[in-house]
Length: 244
Image (tube, rainbow, N blue to C red; front, side, top):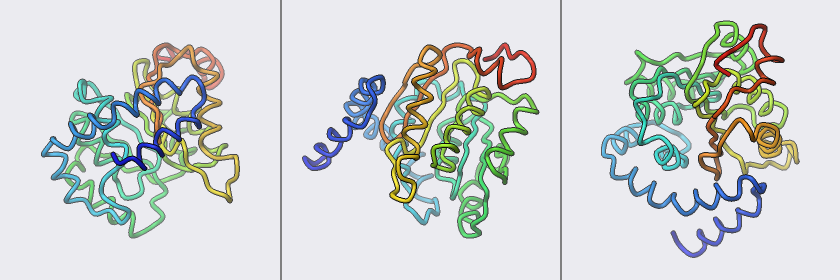
C-alpha cells in the first residue's frame, strides 16, 4: 500500500465509534495479509475473471470475508443477502461457502444488471434462490417460514430507516453463532445527509453489544451473534424462538 493510501486508511479510523475502533485497527493491520492469501487462491481468481460486472469485478470486501471465514468455510449452510445487483457478493459467497444455499434478494428492476446477475450465478444455480421483491416483504416471508441463516449480508437501501429495519428483521433470522455483515459503513451521499448507513449501524451495535462480537470493521462491518436476543424474541416474533 502506498503512502497516500496508508494515510487515507489511517485517517478513516476517526470515523469509527469507540467500540469499533479496536476491530478497525486490527482489520487495517490484517487486510494486506488477507488480500495476499486470497490472491493465491487460483479458483477464486478464475471465478472473478470470468464474471461480467459493469462496476468492476473485484469485490473490495473479499479479503475481509476470506480473513473471517476461510478457516470454517464448510460450516456455513444458509446464506442470505439483501441487495444483489449484478451478483458480485453472491458469487463470492457461493465460492467461499461451497455447501451453502444462497438466497439472493433484490428488486431486480434493472434489466442489464439482472442479466449480468443471471450470467454470473449460472454455475451455482442449483443452490441459488433468486428472490425478487423489497427487503421488507421478503424478510416478512422468511420470518413466516421460520427460516434461519448462518450469514446475512445487508447491502440494500442505504438510508437510515431502511438499514435499521433490515437489521432488525435480519437479526432475528440469524442463528446464534451466525454472522451479520453490513456494507458501506462509511458511505455517504449529500442528498441523504446524516441519515445514511453509519448512524443506523452504530445505533444497533450500541443497543446489542452484549449479544455480539465484532469480527472486522472497515468499509464493511461484520459481527457474530454470540447469544440469544430476548428483545427480538419477545417483541418481534409471535412465538418463542429458542434459537435467538
